[in-house]
Length: 299
Image 1 (cartoon, rainbow, N blue to C red):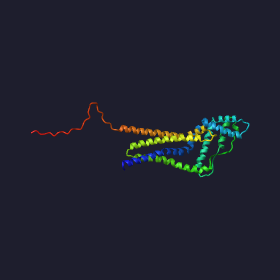
Image 2 (cartoon, rainbow, N blue to C red):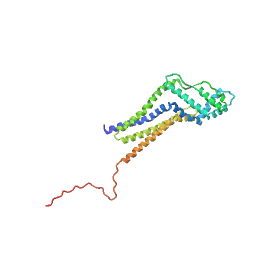
Image 3 (cartoon, one colour):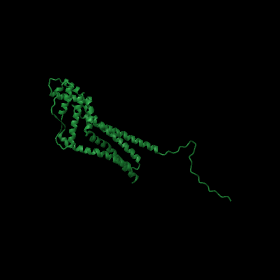
Image 4 (tube, helix red, strand yellow):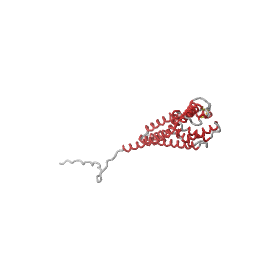
């Protein structure tokens, strides 16, 4: 294989590998991060102490209870009680349980065969919270209604498309990172100048990490700005940041790792170059040996 052909083939393989890096990281994050109930609940747990999320919960629960409880109870007092409740251990336990129940229901639907809407019965969570509130002597705890109410978390019309997309995502989560690694190794192996191929691969990986971080930032902007007027943008931003925390970490790791490998390769390349001996001032470089004249024999 000629020098030019090896260089062109190596460049194509390395470029394709670097292009797959951000897509592979995104697919792996969605399939192994968001699709894992334990990781999802762990990521959402700190939001129970976020002020924006607590305010959004207080407004939503306060409005719901004001329509179901005794109308003589002042709405401001009801909201203050709910806001106080969001700072208790009972709220944190109920928050985790509600997220776990919703995630289990969605995951079961995406991996199952049902056709109906995905719903979650929050009555067990409400009963647990009410019991904890009554034990802590929280005002208005006895007025909290515990009724079986199915809350829809996934419409039936979108289930078939989401199920097909989820299966493709699970396949891509394994094959995209594997393909990126194989293409990178192949591109370096066929390169005529392997050190340059390693540098190009490292820089391409760093660029992929930077593009991944940019995509996360753009996605956050589009998510927050596209919300309805009655949805808290601060709470939605906090949820988005919690869910994409691992993805942002991966983007920084790719960026730092790529730049580090590229710099190390460049440094070792400079150190391996042969150095010519330095000459002192006034000293001439040794010239070529003059041919010796043949010795004439004397008569």
